[in-house]
Length: 345
Ligand code: GLU
Image (cartoon, rainbow, N blue to C red; front, side, top):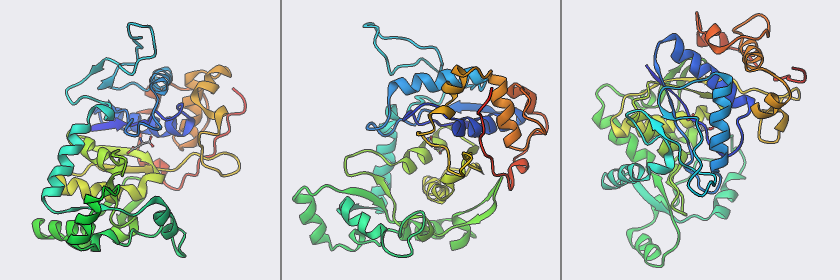
C-alpha cells in the first residue's frame, strides 16, 4: 500500500489539511504501507517556498511522519536566503511538481499523438459567461466544445496569429478509445469507483466539466494532469483527500486509464467547517496549525480533537497519531459533519 500527503504550498497548513492528512496517515499506518509527501507547487503564481518550510514543520510537529519526499529540515542556501530546495528521500522523486514538468509534457505529447487534445482559444471572459448560464452546478456548465468544432483551417489561422490557447482533452474521443481498448468496459463503468467513505460513484465526462484543460494558456500544467501523472508514476494505491475534490476524481480516472495505469482506492473525507458551517479556508487564520501551536495547544491536543471530530474517539482527549491506528477504518467517517471549535487549548 502506498498513500500520499499532497499539500499545495499556497498558504499555511490549516486544520482542514491536518484533518485529511491525519486520516491518510492512519490509513497508511494501519495497512503498514508507505506514505509519500508530494509538494503540489504546480502553480508558480500561488506557490511560495516559505509555505513549504512551514507545512513540513507543522506536519512534523503534529507527528504526521512520511517515508518518502522532502525532509523537514531546512537548509538555507549559501546567501542564507529562503531556499526552495529540501533534501529528498525515496526512489520516486523528485517529489516537487515544479521539478516534474518534463513528465507532464511527455504525457501531453503522447495524448496529442493519439489525437486526444485540441487547442482552446476561448478567453476567460467567454468562459465566465458560460459559467453564469442557468443550471450550472459546482463545476459550472460543462465546456460545450466550442473549439473542438473549429475547422482545421480556422484552427491553423488562429495558431498562426498566435492567439493564446489552452489545451483541452477531447473527452468523447477519450471515452471511445477506452471503450474500444478495455474489454468489458461500459460508458458507466469507465469513470466509476467505490469510494471508501461515499460508496459507489458513477460519473460521465459532462458531470465533471466536459472537455477539461490539461494546460493553461500561460503554459502552466493543470492540477488534474499533474496529479494523475504523479499518482501513476509514484505507484500510489490510495488517495485520501477532502470531498471538495470528489468531482476531480473522474477526470483523474480518465487520465489514469488513458495512461494505462491502475486506479488507486479513493477516500473523500468530509470537510471541516467552522461554527457557521463555512468550510475552513485561508481566512481562518486562528485555525492554522501554526496559530494553535502559538496559542498553547500541544500536538496531541490537536490530534485528539481531530480524532474526536472524525468519530474515532468518544472524547477529544489528547492522543498521539499512533494511538489511533488500531482498528482505524474510513467507515467511521460516514455521515460525519465535523465542526472545528478550537477556542480553548
Ligand atoms: N494539492 C491539493 C490540495 O492541497 C490536494 C490534491 C490531491 O490530494 O489530489 O488541495
